[in-house]
Amino acid sequence: MNPVASIWYGVDPLAEKFPVYFGYSYCYGNPTVFIDYKGKYPTKKEAAKLANHIYDGKAGDIVDG
Image (tube, rainbow, N blue to C red; front, side, top):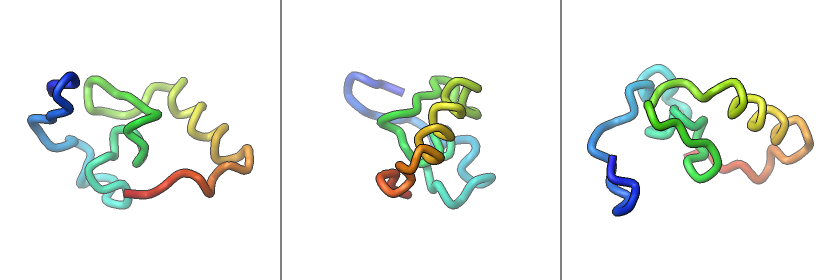
């Protein structure tokens, strides 16, 4: 990954496990908010942040894909 040039050199290793999020499984479909440098599952803090965002009545502003 080259974050300066916004170039990714590989496919998300979890893309097949979570097809609903397409190529952004590592961040549950929201690469601008959730960052996972290893390309695996989000941290507990990131998952809690996403859950809080959804259950705080803000689910409508998260876009899939």
